[in-house]
Figure 1: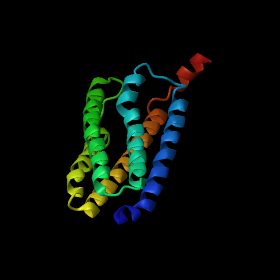
Figure 2 (figure 1 turned 30 degrees about the horizontal axis):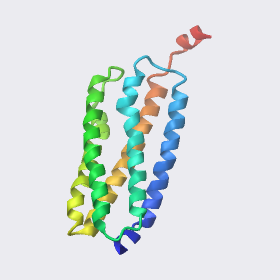
Figure 3 (figure 1 turned 135 degrees about the vertical axis):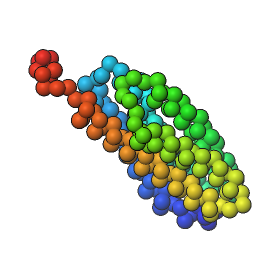
Amino acid sequence: MPELLEWGTFYVIIGAAAGALIGLQFVVLTLIAERPHPKMGEAGAAFATPSVIHFAVVLVLSALVSVPWRGINTLSFSWGLLGAIGIVYSVMVAQRMRKQTAYQPVFEDWLCHLLLPIAAYAMMATSMFVAWSHARAALFVVGAASLIFLFVGIHNAWDAVTYHIFVNQPSKQESKGHK
């Protein structure tokens, strides 16, 4: 399919970035695990896991677009299904964000952990139907959704790291008491 060939470089770049960022996220979480907070498990399910999922979605989309499809129908069904599953997952993330007590989410958290991902998943799900009549436009919509996931994941990972460094770090008094 000629439209997909034009997207090859785009998906190689963002797919590689997503794969590298998944690995980096695991390294950071491992380093943070040395200083566990009692309620961080429930906060991790609400805030850290979705970032890895967003990077994984970009990786999956990159792989799907790289498959030598004969037409857009199977590909668009795949990204539409992924979008529908993502919307359900986002509802679960919202429940986890409300339920956890380690951190009180602010508007930026709701925007980057819930609203933008739901918008990107909805873009993928609805573009499935657009693809059957306007393949080029649908590919741009899915490309935009991929970038949303990539940048939201980067923002959320950075936000988590800075939170642990500047807010959740033990005080010097606590550190001296443990030695």
